[in-house]
Length: 130
Length: 130
DNA sequence: GTCGCTCTTCTACGAAGTGTAGAACACAAA
DNA sequence: TTTGTGTTCTACACTTCGTAGAAGAGCGAC
Image (cartoon, rainbow over all chains, first blue to last red):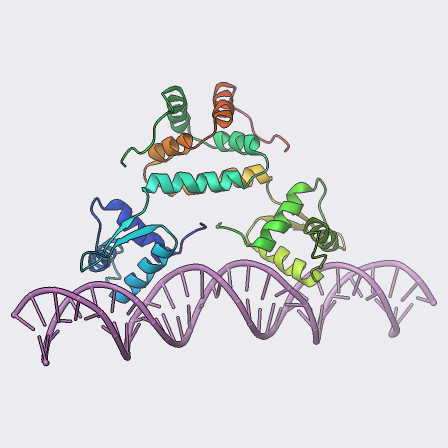
């Protein structure tokens, strides 16, 4: 799955931040607003569309072609995606326990508490909406 | 920090697997042996050196220039590196708790047990040898 | 001291991925 | 059918990575 480029990430962030699916033009506006400040430079819509196609190809974005301005949305929630990435990295390791130990060693007390809570509470569920 | 290429990863793996620092030539041999089987093709030493330089530039490898055949070793342990990567990804997320929840949702029972154990035991130590 | 060997640095190139966007095409409304 | 908006095709420059030759540097042998 690998890492994303800057623009790809920006677009994914915009999609993740939006409840409803977005059109390319809407994304274009969102991106301009997001990177606001000094630049104010707007990307060409084709640029946004190209990146969206690439993201769709990578499986990160799904597109609704049934409506005319196509609608784009993230295939999975940001949290899901991030968690998957973390697992991918963990899975590539030979010594999972050791990695987990290090991971916890770097975790903040708050996060440790969160983890404890999560481990105690029923671990059996998935598909919660973000 | 980002992700590594195939050869870069192979070299890091070799360094991580070795107790002592290695020279470029030793790494060259190790890589040949590691990828053994059908290929048997050996990389040019310069290739190994180039990649080592790049890895040094990225901070993943440190080099001892005081001895003649320079000695190369991984800057941090494999587990440390992996854990750092996981934190990097987690840190880039806006909703850490949600990500952690998803992460745990995908974790195997064994790993969950490991985590529980780690969270219960004194979290205060670092620098364990891999 | 300089010859030669080994190791390192410089330089380079091709492939892949990414940011960027124009040109051309498709489709619906007027 | 024309027109405007949205999508696809194509393209190019830049970066990263795998790959390695050519040239330079240091050290031991003679």
